[in-house]
Amino acid sequence: MLSTLLLLSLLGVSDSLVSPDGTGRLPAMGWNSWNEYACDISDDVFVQVADLVVNLGLRELGYKYVNIDDCWSTKGTTRDNSTQRIIPDPNKFPQGIRHVADEIHARGLKLGIYGDAGTQTCGGFPGSLGYEETDAAAWSEWGVDYLKYDNCNIPQEWVDVPYMYPDNGGTPNGNVPPGYDWSTSNSSTRYNRMRNALLAQNRTIQYSLCIWGHANVVSWGNATGHSWRMFSDIYPAWTGTYQYSQALMPILNQAAFYANVSGFWGHNDWDMLEVGNGNLTLEENRSHFALWAALKSPLIIGTKLDAILPEILAILKNEELIAFNQDAVYGAGAIPYRWDGVGNETHPADYWAGSSSRGVHAFVLNTEDEEREMELVFDEIPGLREATGAGSGPYLVHDMWTGEDLGVFASAVMLRVKRHDTAAVRINTADGEFVTSDFGRVFAYLY
Image (cartoon, rainbow, N blue to C red; front, side):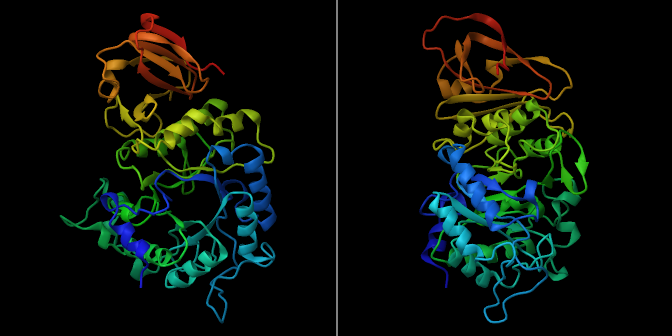
């Protein structure tokens, strides 16, 4: 029998997965091992990371999950003969997962773990299909607070037939029959089975669906999990693809078509942060973080913290961008504007805007390979007049990177944006302040 929590959850806001303690209302923030450690993990890694999250001041900004990704168990499909539970790798976790959870919790943080909705994980370790109740009970007993649930190694009888894949159809609905209910798909069923198993526990576990945007998850993910992956895996490059992974701009291009989906209790997940990884420039790292924050994507750090550069740490600790992502009043993320609605994996939408309890925010991305002056016209910004109650201005423009006011402008401001950088500004009414100019030119990259 499912717990009362499940009944409360399924009767929540707009069929959202609502947790009474507030888990999942806002995008998750934390750290994950996969991007930098892959399978080279151990209990020491996670305890050391937890110490760094605290000592670097990340915990106080909201980064609270320390997440174990794939490769934490014994290889293959091996389970305990008596309990049928997945067995933690004794070489990596000699004292078990509960020990790691206790260490993480002692530091005021929460522990995440990785599972898969197939017979094996993407790395070839035991999956949870058919063992949902067993695994959910084990994770709860071990003190797990977060589950990333992947989508590899699915038996044929559980795969949605090809014509039901939206990514094969070229449109959000693919080539499905008219009126097809995606919540009845095999993919939805597999993920709902784990949802039900988690909700039957006496522990709240944040549920992250790593389903890569398949099966039109935007139509049912909100009642199943707290977030849902919307595209391929990320890798640290500006453009292009690598095996099954996508660089930043192809992901942002995809995000533009689904920007109006996220809200309280349910978030599009554009994958873990690559800030600090690969050969991304400082400006590309800034754009990556600013736009993931603007999209209200979970902010899960994926870089090594023991040798993090000060300028990279400063990006991850930008309080104003985090505040937009975690705003308790406005659940929707930024949406694209001044955009033709046509996909472009090298030059996606470059103007984005959204509201928070602090004002209206604009994010201006320079996708070109040279510095540009980019015009921010107030009358074009979605919701600005409605949010401020003002006419055409004047408006106070505040730089979210430097924390400084850029000035008061009547109708527009010209932002000088470096190659692959993103200007992030907050706009408020001027309240009678002196108008710097009718049309201002300012530097938007003062750092």
